[in-house]
Length: 457
Image (cartoon, rainbow, N blue to C red; front, side, top):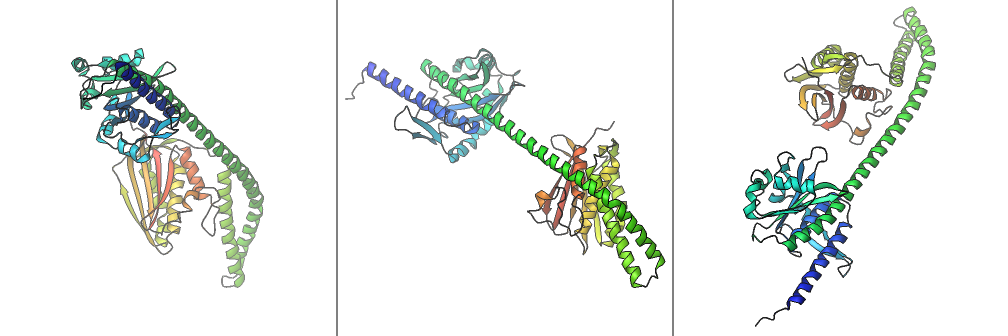
């Protein structure tokens, strides 16, 4: 014969269990500031075997601008097994935790994927969801009430019958909703369950907002750090550029004088004499130094861009004609892959030609024993419509540790040169709203240029 627990004692025991859960939940909400882990802890606490509150729980967060409710996570009794008690020995100091494996298991479950694929549009949300958001209060629907929600996509998608919806409120704003149900047992969601859900949702709302605010502060701090680094980098480059420009101006006049006299010697000396050879070497080296000074002066000046409508394919064809002799001298074969044009861009055709010529000539220098150069031109859709040009050589590639530095001013891997060629290329593309990336692929290096596409009339 079973011993019967007196009703008063049973009620006290139930109240103790509920208070224990609330204490542990409260401590848990204070244990992490990471939104991803927080959502897993909230929904696991609502569905795990240790609390046995509900069989399924879903969390949707609201986009403040659009009002769309985006599914973030769904947890069932079967996937809520990773909850464990940590901390103190009593309820006042203990809390729940969940490990990374359990988080991954929950996130990759079929039910959670269904929830994450669900968006509840503000205009298409059923009456109950709209009332939860606007009235900031919990609602529950029995199975007989659910025809009211049949037009709601998430009800059909997730196979929901009787359910309850609680708002996540913080500072009088609805951040999202928690949806719970009991599809396996069809257990009714009673008044006590709703009261408990409301208490948990209230604490969860504040914890979610704190996490969101923390993420915004982290993002703002990261943006400020990046801006400071760019400012310091810009100031350093400005100082280097000013110094280099002054130095270049001081060197330019004597170099012109030396080059002029050396040129006269070349013309006046017998072609077979040793002195003629020496004078030719001086003229050649003076020419190289003048080109280096021209690069330094070009980098130190603020560029003027003459924007006009142009075609990336036409610019590349001009570049092929301009470097044809160099390609032939280096025994480099040229292959092209152009998608159907046109390829309309807005920019300075002269500067963009300088970009592609620089990249092609660099590729030739990387293949002193000959090789192949493959140029691809196509349209792509990234965050917007773009024109993509890739220039690939077979010159053996670059050391991996040097790849992040190659667009840094004055960095060079060549025994000669200023290290400004790719820095100037990078700046031209940034001024055009584009970007350049470099990577090793196959037997060589690939430089990929992306430029915004403009609409043709």
